[in-house]
Image (cartoon, rainbow, N blue to C red; front, side, top):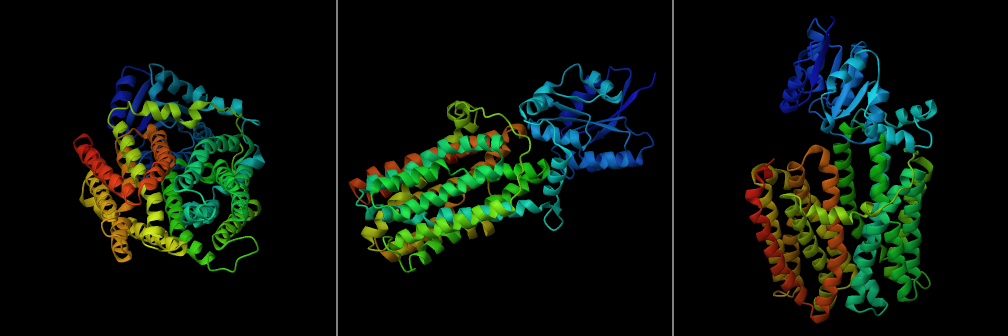
Length: 561
């Protein structure tokens, strides 16, 4: 009896033991060995006289992951068949591995007694792909598998720039994302002073900010679903055009309700980042995505430095008839968004050829997931920490604007400089300070200390109501303010399973989005009492949040990298 020779490739020794136990009693299957990554597997195959008939391999592994390993095995060992055994549930990934040459795609949580049958079937020439991994994608697609022409387009889009190891198209979407970020951050310092030109109260001005965040919370998942149906490019153009129209409307608004309408419109069409993220997922392999999203996120943060500077410069421009100096900043923002729109139309190719039906339910708005997530052991407390941290930040972000303008007697141009300064300080501290701190201290400790310093700066602002005191306090705030959110994301990542990380980080982002909608309203109520009240209350609250963070240290023993 001819035995099927099997090589197991996975970086988890627990998986090795499970598969070894599962296959040990199969008389027609023999295990040649184990490898912890694709590179190690290739070395074993090159050096051993006996070559495996079937390789059972994970996708996500250090050094060399499954995608690259499939290509190398097909190139050098054409008779060896590959079965992917993974936690990655993404149907697109399953389809992509099959197109690369994998003969099987099985999820780890469905490993059963039939694994030996799968190995035998693949060895005999059958291709077995778990139905819920990929068949739904084919059934919901308007065209099923890609045509030859589409395959050539996808191959071209995934062509890697040797210098960066990422597709060339990726850098185009990064540039478009940077322009979009700049367009967005130009108007952040303007919302409050512009609202005052319409004789809005502080509370009414806070509603102007919250209306955008709330509209975006509802609009983003709808645009994401539409991009699955109609294509990324069309929806990205639609989203950018929404920003153009909204900012033009705001710049020329003569009455307050038009200003509210412009912010709601910008929020509802403000799915630029989510669609851009979908483009990145389309054109990168699973191995490339962590690096790609890291670069995209850093570029977006760079916009928070450039945008407020351009906001200040825009206020120096000669005004047009019926448009104030603050309105000119909205005009510049619209022009920059229009430039991003033109770039998208002319140069960005369509990246989604596997169109899906438009199916939207309440779960897409994350309400149920957000509520249910609080019941998750341990990490539910990190979600609470994100919400409280975001709430304290957004209360302060609104409250310091009337304080700066009315107590310190500064103007809107100075406000733009303040936002730019905080952006620059945060960008510098993230680049030069965060990584050394992460290596030396427990992550929870860094989060707690950052929140404590943030709380102290809030309390000190009304105590030293001078411009010089404000500058000193602002420097301390700017240096630590950018630490909590990325560190909370890191702790969440370290304390969750690989297959759940995307959903968990998305839920965490939803908590911050909710705090961004609630915080300005609370701040507007507090500012109506006095300009000092928000800082005193939020300062004390933030120190309590810091204590809550420190209390989590014992629960998150993996808080160190």
